[in-house]
Amino acid sequence: MAAPFSRRVSSTCSSLRFRTGCLKPRLTRIIQLLVPKAGEYSTQSKEFNGAETHFGFQSVAEDEKENKVYEVFENVASKYDMMNDAMSGGVHRIWKDIFLERFAPSPGTKLLDVAGGTGDIAFRFLKYVDAPAHISTQQDFGIPKDAASRVLKKICRQRHHHLMMKVQRSSQNHRLDTPVLPDDDSSHVIVCDINQAMLDVGRQRAKQLGFTSGISWLQANAENLPLPDNLFDAYTIAFGIRNCTHVQKVLDEAYRLLKPGGRFLCLEFSEVKNPLLRSIYDSYSFQVIPVMGQLIAGDWKSYQYLVESIRQFPNQEDFAAMIRAAGFRMVSYENLTFGVTAIHSGFKI
Image (cartoon, rainbow, N blue to C red):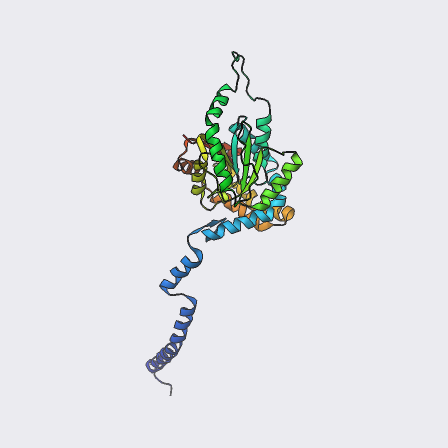
């Protein structure tokens, strides 16, 4: 005769309790192995990761991002300019030309071009300052057009010479051409980049284009440059600041290095406000550009990162606020191609 239902249920429950009791120590041990204790996780985090930042859409340790970005540009250096043409259909050249027109440097300008490895901005700068005057007047009243400039430069010459001595001493441990900045009225640009492979491409291009003077090359981190205060008339950075780990530190360094009255200019990808255009732009960015990177440069991941890094960068208004926070005044921006890129400008006053 079968046991009563209540007895069978009781027996089953007892059996389950016995099996659960046997498994409990094993399950506890497995959980302990897989999940660290509450103080162990924070200790490991601090020891191995420190503060985190973004690398594209990934979260990485701050001290890891610099190495990852270095690897990206080391991988793409030889195909960098070709890929810029392919990705933008050559429009990046127009953006850079407009950037120089808004800059409008005068002859004798001392420029620091940061993240300028392959020389695109530096070469445009040298061509611009060597070209005939871009603005003419109906009457000059017999006054030399550069009279005011000559007076100011004469006043600053002695102080500039003292700064140059400091530059030469501070650059001994960095790869920097000499002389760094000429102690005269000539124009000069220092091209700075953290990646030596990009600088090597820029040097080769300079030789091919015939730029044998007026340009120097510096391998250094934009967050901590081995140069003295108040040295440059202008600071430019094009399509580079979004790759830096601490953008605010880069802006603070720019402010430190500029002379009073000096100008900061940044050309960078930004935010497309129009929803329809933004949708088209996003589709092209994520579905086409990495494919181009694979076909032309043999590198999908680097161009996937570049696309993602654009989305992580502050929009026009937020970036302008960061520039003001560094101390710059008269901060403004101009959208190009519906906000795909933007030119930000500020003055050290």
